Image (cartoon, rainbow over all chains, first blue to last red; front, top):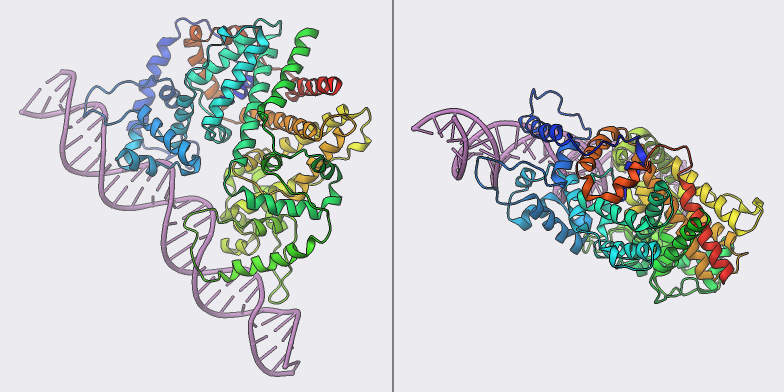
Length: 284
Length: 284
DNA sequence: AGAAACTGTGTATGTGCTACGCAGTGGATA
DNA sequence: TATCCACTGCGTAGCACATACACAGTTTCT
């Protein structure tokens, strides 16, 4: 979801009218599939390079894989595999996610999974787009762009809190964008349309808010670790010992900057960010 | 560096006066070291759990490991190992970093490295704290907290741009805080002291800014991938095909939200964030 | 019926981290 | 000066994991 920005910011993307476009992709896909399966010419085993085929990855995410016509009925679906992966990641984190683990849970061999997903990275991408599901309906939020964007941010926050591994999953490599990811982006952009911001500004604003949500997720993710206490105590010792090297930090601690609080961690940053965007809206 | 927040936000940290504290940690360390080396009692091989010993990790980062008194002179130092790792990560990314790779480069066996660093995670932590080096001197920046914080952010941005793998390295698991990390945090907190913000607000503000820097680093990191074009084209196809499902996005694209630009990617968000913080300063 | 497409599986390969124990080294100690 | 043993670097080995490949069984098309 995050990658959306990097992607879109990326190249000079040719925007084409939504017509006469379906044909060639529709055709292109089976062709690519066959080439993959048949391993035609056997040629280079792709040394150790990125083996991901964008076409296949995207087809998987958008559910556009062609149904097999012959052969035994598949025992599973990509969706089921993804859901199983999600359960594991939710329960034990992304590190616990392995192909073998998923296979065991589903009572199949490890290699059987590769009939449904091209590889682990694609599985993870599918998992992400699956947990994202549909964005909230912001049209019911009243009060203009600001409450709407805030509602969007909090909804996003809820998703990230519920499935913190999204952060790691999307933080690794380039990610294939699934429909739900795009839908979330679209929802946020829509929320900002009533403002008089430029399209680019709208987009940057969305990314800014999303970045904050991700940032805070990262925070609480670490915080929730079980073994925190040991680290906390020892690091505190360390800092105390070198207190004179870090005067401002020492003062901040003395003033209680790190005392526990009940406030929603998202609040501070979200308020600042929205305030900053509001300033831009008014000035522009 | 990021973890700083999660860590400090974490527990109710007892702040002690910097005195009579060095003794027990100083003593505690060799003890822990011996216990590690001697593998006393052999007891549980720690099934498959986090084997990291906070004491050892922190001692490594803070350069407080005790010098060996006897035996052959070590061929290397932890610092050299870290620097070698940094070179690899700078040149080919974090994925290319493996113990064997570092060992080859240093002309030693893989296992020799484990005489200097407890394991790969600790090596990465050490690498991070090494590249961070010292924060910039912000006292020379005039104009109050705002220009100073902005300078801090841009300095931070420079570091992240020069070593994008920091993002991945710090994005994974809990990280041991090294002295340089703390120094950066301290510098930012110091910059904010002239404002009348609460200690907690100062800290939250720093984290907010840092989050944005990290967020943007993530963006350009993806963007810089070489194989972008394929993905770009295919994803564009995909979105074009489903344009009607994403009206706001379609409009944004039409208005050129994603056309290439020369502006510093950091600008938009940084301005918003600083503006938001300024609003808080004035209101409070 | 037979061919073709497709399924799940067993086996094997490669990479990567790291535990363990050995042989040599050289500063500390007698 | 002779000795010892804390230390070094190294070879071997084990384990986890992703994934390639070929095979045998199953279903549908011709």
